[in-house]
Image (cartoon, rainbow, N blue to C red; front, side, top):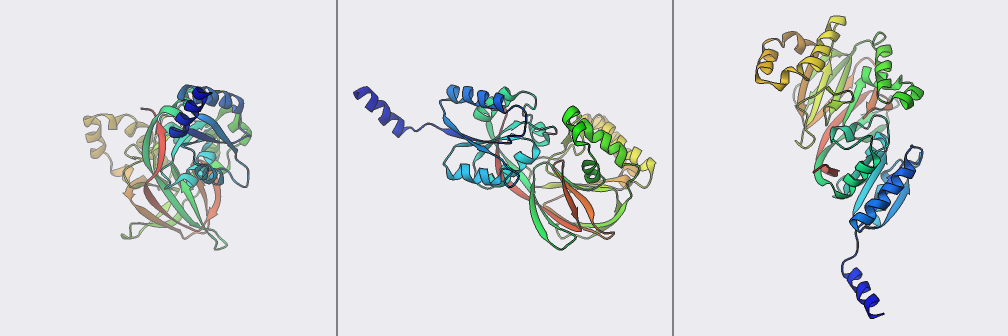
Length: 336
């Protein structure tokens, strides 16, 4: 009895750490997730995990607040990009570490941070024992056609124009079968019907820029599935957001954009000679795709409402938007 009392006193003096898992019950792999978390608990000597399901009404933000209020030491978001983004919104500014177990199809945020996207066990181990990295998030404040104002969080990138139309047109059944490749099918269908629209944008209260654009992307990270390096210089912890303006005038313009993303960004930028070649031949590219960087950007669309997406999820239509970076707002578990 004395030994039990001493152990109890030791436990009270050094309480075990505890994790919370906020998971989307509609995703495949929940049983494997529970088993992997149980093994990690035992290995790391954690107390039993707090399990919280997401719902349509609360895709994760409320659960994150509940987990923080419960006094846990780690919150794990298990689901797709929507679940991860919603949990991150609830943890923003709290200093609470967020682990990620990807259970979706795109898993954009996890891919950019080198978190395993096809191995639940490895992702759980990383969530429990990885390194903490402090990263930026993007706050999107948008105005709807009816005048309503909304604020949303973006972890990877938000877009207005053809990329949002592409996501809106993605076949959900095809997405379940082939994952992010379904976006390629949607893109091939959206491109012929896309029409440039007049827009103006301004970074950090600088001068206004006007252009007819196919899409404007505001990014925290630059890599897309398929090893596409859309914004190779984007950094998740530099205190800035990156803006990409796609303004092709015709099919040749789209070919210049394709060359920039798939040839210049992926190949030429890797060497000093390649970067010199880009500088010497960038005249036509700069007319079709424009890269800018700042701490905030304001967008207005003169041709009427435009489709809007965040991190690969459709978010309806908007008539204007303002994006700002929230530096060092989130702590994420990443590979050591």
